[in-house]
Image (cartoon, rainbow over all chains, first blue to last red; front, top):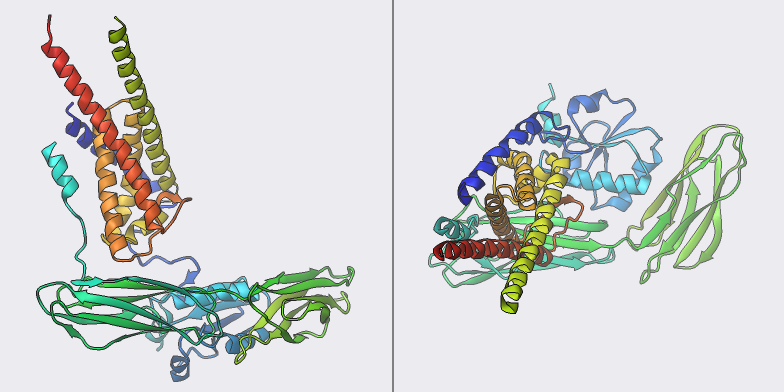
Length: 139
Length: 214
Length: 160
């Protein structure tokens, strides 16, 4: 077999194990990017959580303009001022759900990490789709 | 063999925005005592046509990019000045500014800012537990200032009066050992140890630890 | 007589070196491919981070490429379809280095993904050095193959 024919043969051969891998591998990626990142939950899941507290990770102005009822503001611009309110109402086992603007929002993840680190809170989640999702689902 | 050589030379480079950048990566260290960090990204229009900046967006509200004007003639230079507000952030901050130009409006260049705001303190442990009915003995919570920082404790309190805390040993500005214990271990209880520091001066940081009798 | 044996020794030690390099690099690719197979989801994310292909393409590549690496690596180690394996690996490395170059020029923050999360680094200098070394080794094998083919052809001409 000439060298490049061999190469083509190998390329074709690799498809054989690739197919079952695509179907059966426990850690196979989702074909669409809509899948949940670690720590993220959907709005339905969040609403079903008992003992839930909403945390608004957006800018102060956005929070004042409108937020999920009962949500406490917690963002990195004024972390030191805002953390006490969250800490003092905290009970172990409480489910904290953080939201920010919408889909492409890294801020929630940063706030989540910092909250886990500084308060030792275990059940910290991020609302997938953020404030946008909440608004879309209002009657 | 010739096809092989050809494939080797075929560049896969995605269309880069027509500007040539002096740098697309900025990193710096800062402390919470600083107000902001300013990053400058210089560029030059090395093409033969004038280029207009069509898209300038930051990934984070903490980073505000500014541009003197939008259109640059061939050979002209300019810069994007990015203002990163420290706020009360801590740790490694990453933000990106997407810049797209008129010749490739769908293929933006990403300018990266990496600002490291090291934590001035080391604290441990995050959780102190006692067994219900067990001995109500002291456990120690330590606050240490990292080298180069001087942080004092302004106030200590607990959120639940079932617990009590006081400074056991102190080296002002650098290390504090706080003795915490429950007054009794008769019932299950939960509280927070609340330590108010004096840094940064304007809005000082508060440290928390969970206290449990279980 | 002595001349002939030194040439023979030189030739066979060259062959030994060639085989050793083949084992080392073949093993390297089998290892790298295997690591990627442990977490295809993460590998897909790593590919996507280069911002060169669409997400579904990255998923397909994340599932397919490790197997190609392993098969080609096996080819180098066992000698089965060795020439083809060598070309596949060179081709993969060249594409990868170019992707790396475009990522570097655009200032992307990527974690290599070559060896799974184990040796992730966004240090471009290190990455170019590492891949440069691997490519150099592969090209050397290619050169050896070309030389031995020349030698066979010239032997064939010398028919007593």
